Amino acid sequence: MNKKSRILFIGALILLLFIYFFPVWKIGLSAPQYPEGIGLHIWVNKITGQSKFDLDNINRLNHYIGMKEIIPDEIPELQIVPYLIALLILIGLVGILTNKRVFFFIWFLLFLMIAVVGMADFYKWEYDYGHNLNPDAPIKVPGMTYQPPLIGTKKLLNITANSYPAIGGWSAILSLSIGFIIFFIELKRFKIKPKFSLINRGLLNLRFIVFILIFLQGCSVGPSPIEYGHDMCVLCQMIISDQRFGTELVSTKGKVYKYDSVECLVNDYLTGSLTSQQIHSIWVTDFSENSRLIPASSATYLQSQTLRSPMGMGLSAYSDGEIARQMQLQSGGILLQWDELVQMIRNTESGQKLSNLVDSLAQE
Image (cartoon, rainbow, N blue to C red):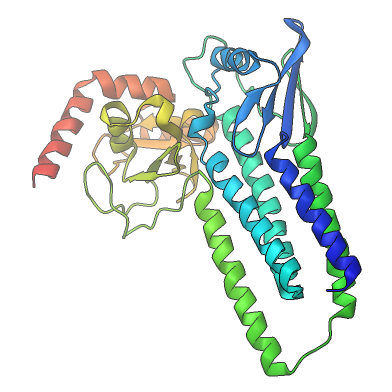
């Protein structure tokens, strides 16, 4: 690296340090009941209110419309990202001390991947909080979701939400921008080396990038594809084989629990060891689109003995309520929403039979 690139690289690393001392992102809310506005500051390792009680006030608002409570200690990204930034800084320091451009290229590509995956994960987090609503919420507006904008301003009922980078975020953006400048400077100065050496270096860097991608993918919280014919239901211990009925429960720590049917999922939801605060999301398979997982809270369910499910309760799920009604006309049965389904399995004789069946299978 030439002198100009090294100076720019040192500046980029200093800017990265700002992430540890300033919030990375800010989400603001303004409404008639909060004329001065309230908001969140998202740091690299925590979430705080814009003012002292803002986080509590936002959680109260979320409760009324069915959104989950924001509990910073249960968001795994806040525990992982500080180490990823430290890794970036460490790689950068090695590059500056050794003056080898390969460390810069590794730093730049890793930084770029973290930025892209981070924004995608942030969008996914916002989507889940805005769409996966509690059906028992005091205020329910049919068809209404409350996902904040990824960046910009959006109207949610009588609340105006805005989302923009904070000081730490702008410093990261500037650091990555400097990285682009160095990248093009060094690309022009790059001298082609012997073919064998270049291929080996390329393969080494490719393996490193693949490793990082796999690591980052494992850090995200959400559903994972069900391997039909291989994965086993955590409740009844049967192999999950029918692509129309597989379901999942995801904990806030990212652990995925897989089930062979809606019945097993709900039974474990009601009697399992996870509390509601430890559950990140619940997913069911759209019966009309094999293997496609959809949020359990937004699905329409049909109980019909004509459409037998693995555990015998005849439960199928649909993302489109109209398709569910058409299926009901063909197969009979009753339509249910998530809260009605949970209540039915909690109280009915069918739910008790399911519990007994699961117990007998476990003993075998």
